[in-house]
Image (cartoon, rainbow, N blue to C red; front, side):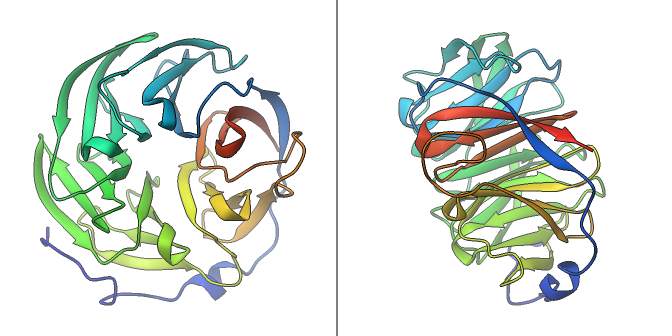
Length: 288
C-alpha cells in the first residue's frame, strides 16, 4: 500500500455515464419516528444480531442505544469517554468502533445490549475522524475530516493513507470490496481500492450533491447517501445511477421532511435515518 495517494492522479469522470439509464422499481415508505430527544445525532449502525440500533449522539457526547423497530431509547454509554462522536461500525469480533471526533481517535467498545465498555483505541494521522469502516479483509479505514485524509489500519497499526480530500466523512464497503467515500467538501463520492488507490468519482450536476455525509448499501447493492445540505437521502443503483431521491426539504415535521440529515443505516428492508437537526431518528421501509 502506498503511503499517500493524490486525488489528482487518477480520476475517471464517471458522473455523466453513471447518471444515465432507467429508474429502479422500488420506493421508500415511512414507518416510524423517534421523539426529538437527541442532540444532532449523526451516523448509526444495527448490531450484528439485529436487536439494537446504536446512534452517535453527537452533541450529547454519547452512544444512544435504541430498539430498531419502535425507536425507543433503551440506554446510553460513552459519557465522559467520547467527544462529539460522528460514526459507528461493528468489526468482525462484534466490537463497536466509534469515530470519536473530538478526541481524534477511533474508540473501540465491547458491547452487550445497552452496555458498552471502552477496551481499545486507534490513533494515527487522522485528525477529527468522522467516518470509520471495517473491510472483509480485516482492515479498518477511518477518514480525518480535519486532516483531509483516509487512513488504513491493520492489527491496530496504521499501514498507509490517501490524502487530498476535503472534509471526508463516511466510508462504505461495496460487495466488490471497493470503498466509497463521501468527500463532503468537494460535493462528490470517491471510489477507492482497498489499497486506497483512487478508482473514480461520482458527482456533478446530475447528482446535485451538497455536502454528502454518511453512506450505506442495501442488500440489492444500492448506495444510500445522506446529502446533508440538500436535506435529502439519495439512492444510487449498483452501477452508480441516481435512481431515487427521498425528501422534500426542511419544513414542518412529517414523512420525507429532513433537516440536514447525516446518518443512514440499512438492514433487510429497514432504513434508519438520522434527521440530524430535527434531533430525531426515523425509520423507512424498502418497497420493491
